[in-house]
View (cartoon, rainbow, N blue to C red):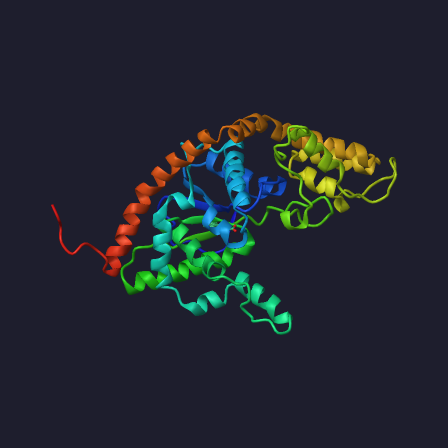
Length: 356
Ligand code: TRP
């Protein structure tokens, strides 16, 4: 992992924190790009970890209550099924920790509006409006979208996170969290820890069925666990999606270029170096597209199949999920209650006198 911003907290404990926005159902790209590396990095270290479901971020762009609810459930079940240990990691739902939203308000008052004007996500929405005639630049833009980075700063600063693993598109938000923390610390007292964005440069984005980046918005994803369709098993759904990967029209026995193939691209994310070399040789020897897809399916399935039972169990038993999330919220609130109290005292909000 390479760090995009130098850390100011080199000698103390690492506290890793990251949020997952609850506006979709996890697919294979999410698994390879975020879920698997996050869980692995925790297993192989003594770092403290806070992973949470960012449902208040989810409602910024997704106004479908059923999807927000289903996504929260599916994301929680996915991370647990893939091996996240809720005893080891503080795993919680953002909205169960009300102190975060309270801190966000306090931070709003230490955040220059001009800083938010420069946010890429906000500017992109304004640019789209500016391309249209007779449309207000801020049309359809809510205060939620505009202030999104402040809520994210509250998520991070609340728990004194030192390391925040994120996608490249989120680096600016971590810089904003540092900026806001700096303003507060300077104005009142040095309360907040400066977070560092952690971006994995070696992590290729997974390619989707059509050869573009795998993304929910392109509709080109391979499902991780499938939808809960009792007619078609999750395994069959995955197989079906893999068989739909777009290839060129080369015939079996024709030598093929692995580096120009989505099948090979995805295979690399699941295979060992020796298996990758072997597949490369099979491409040169002219493996047929159908056989290559079958090999890819078997490779992915070998890794995912052991997680399916737990996923399906949790999806069918939301009470168990809820108990795990409540345990996480209780752990998180041990920190957040104290941190909010310190922030309030720093700004002059405290009881006028002690009552018995
Ligand atoms: N905005 C992040 C994303 O879309 C999700 C997120 C919310 C987050 N709060 C966070 C990530 C705090 C890291 C830290 O990916």
